[in-house]
Amino acid sequence: MKKIKTTFFCRSCGYQSPKWLGKCPSCGEWNRFVEEEIRVSDTGIVPELQFNSFPIPIDSIEADETERLKVGIDEVDRVLGGGIVAGSAILVGGDPGIGKSTLLLQVMHNLAEKDLKVLYITGEESAKQIGLRGKRIGASSKNLVVLVEIALENILRQIKEIKPHVVVVDSIQTVYSSTLSSAPGSVSQVREASGQLILLSKKTGIPVFLIGHVTKEGAIAGPKVLEHMVDTVLYFEGDSGHSYRIIRGIKNRYGPTNEIGVFEMRDNGLCEVSNPSEFFLAERPEGAAGSVVVPSIEGTRPILVEIQSLVSSTNLSMPRRTSIGVDHNRVSLLIAVLDKICGLHLGNHDIFINVAGGVKVDEPAVDLGIVSSIASSFLDRPVDPGTVVFGEIGLTGEVRGISQQEVRIKEASRMGFNRCILPRTLSRNLSSETNMDIIKIGNIKGLLERLF
Ligand code: TYD
Ligand code: MG
Image (tube, rainbow, N blue to C red):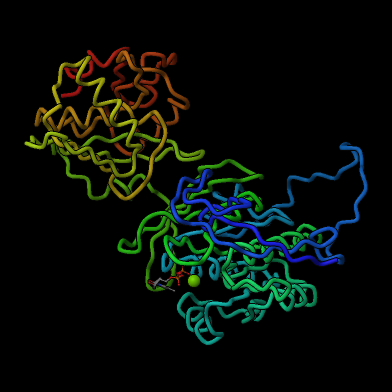
């Protein structure tokens, strides 16, 4: 039985409420609620797509870890946790124009080259446009089939008919189910379409990539609405004004999260950046005050990033504190610690912090880097260019140990750094192994003497 019922959805995160709300209690955004129709049938799903399953003991389930399908682009395989898992749904989100379609077409091209049949469904571009893009990136395989379609029922039928090894839907916001009267891109349409596609994928074992645009304004639901439904969520970082692109795994049921893949947008599509540390440090101003290098861990691998600060005196009664790439609250805390413990009075100074290269780092290991770079800019004394620092800072100024210290030291040594300031908890002596001068500190009181 089909009943028509409506409810209010948040267009940013998909939160449901029986009445209209000004502010979303889930994501905190204002004025994002819209009333939409939801379909309530006996089960809520199309009967032919139901699992009809029965309980089985866990030890009789065949779970084979080797079933991953390698894409052949290392940076993509890494963020996926080693390849595509059969029957998984992968959401690829990002701002318009950042390179989602390009990357996915490259992925499909690579798979098609391996003699796998792949289906690229698009509702955004014409077949001709896809063909042109295909030419640019060199995709010409017969195994790569393009379908221009937005009707969900047709898409499902075609997938069942063609039986591809992998499916891409570009973008999920254009897919439209005729069982719902709301417009394409509305929360209920996006949910319905992804729900059906995910179900089909689980049933048949065909992995699906769903592309979702991040939308700030307007009536289109964002990819956040789907995050809880899919197995893996990948987001593009970096802005279209720069040539680099970072994809980060935000959620992964089959692998580590926070793993990043680094790419550069060229004329012939996205190219892998296999040595990101070198890439992010390429434009480092050596010997400039305020610049400090930190070995940060992104997912499972170490990447050296440069933290820059600018501290300048101000007449504003509320000095400005701006941070890009690091957490704003964390920075405020560290400024207070510097003030209290090191006696650097920053109260009448504007402080700007930036992680060069547009990376976002949100691990406590960068604390020592932030503090060092603020101190360096404030005192106008450059940090020795061969030095890296890392460590978490507590409220009393103590420098706390963090995970994977050895990996970080080795990466810094590989990149030619010769001095490392780190928490005193490091137990192994790595100086001779890595040719590094290792300086252990327990409190940031001792930091300033060691830094310059
Ligand atoms: P696109 O993949 O269409 O973005 P999205 O699907 O995320 O909206 O990428 C479009 C941008 O990429 C556009 O600005 C042109 C640029 N681009 C290149 O620089 N080189 C290329 O080879 C391709 C295909 C695109
Ligand atoms: Mg696109």
